[in-house]
Amino acid sequence: MLRKYIKKEKEKIKRRKLQNSLKSCGQKVYVDASTVLRYPENISIGDYVHIQPGCKLFGGGGIEIGKGTIFAHDIQILSQNHMYDVEDLKYLPYDERIVDKTVYIGEYVWIGARALIVPGITIGDGAVIAAGAVVAKDVPKCAVVGGNPARIIKYRDQKIFEKLSNNSQGYIELCKKYK
Image (cartoon, rainbow, N blue to C red):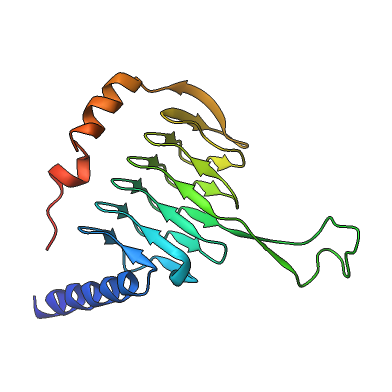
């Protein structure tokens, strides 16, 4: 019983440290203790965001996550790339230069398990990213995408989305209890 309590307290402390290392962090945010944050000073997280175990956010180029977004487990977000296809390339397969490209994730986005988001992507409000998707192009508002590369499968009902989001009817806001 005591060991379980101590383990939970250690996880809370680690989550707090992760959150405190961010550029900005909203209220009632859950970042699992196993989450890897590289360059956390370039990562901003809005209110009521929920990040499950095993996620890796590489924030060198910047990552902005909107209110009410939910990450399933093992998601990777990249915001930098190596120079590999330029006239003055110095080495193979790439050289030491890095290209920063900010990733923007809108409000109330749901990202499925093991999705990969590459540098420079914008995901619109209310989008759903299917498990295992490789997001290599911008995702419009309320689009449901999946596959490798991710393609639009369908759209959510935008009227319902607008009604719920305007009234702050987010799952995490209303259903999750934070200690």
